[in-house]
Image (tube, rainbow, N blue to C red; front, side):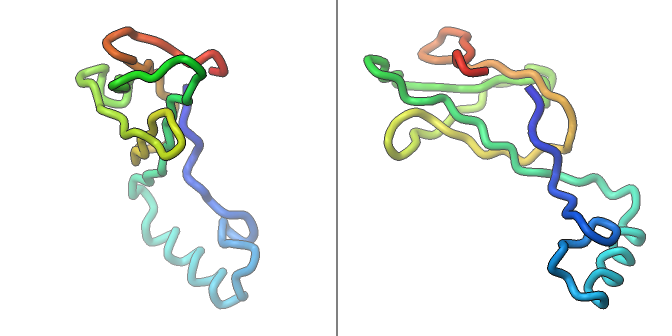
Length: 108
């Protein structure tokens, strides 16, 4: 699975479309000045709630750290588990660990 790429906006040089011409110019200048700076983006992971299944713990492990550690997910309001991570753009592989069993949701 790959996280979504960091938002770049659209419009002049990646500036948001609602930006004024002066804001667009400042945006392009800032991007030029920050060339080479790694960009990070939010990645939302979710283990969905399922009828008849109420796990006590859900973790995720993935290629972002070489599969080095389990990361505990948080119970989500309304059921299931969720976790918001901040990662550099790029492809990642991951699996969920639900009550000790490695799993993937059916919709992935």
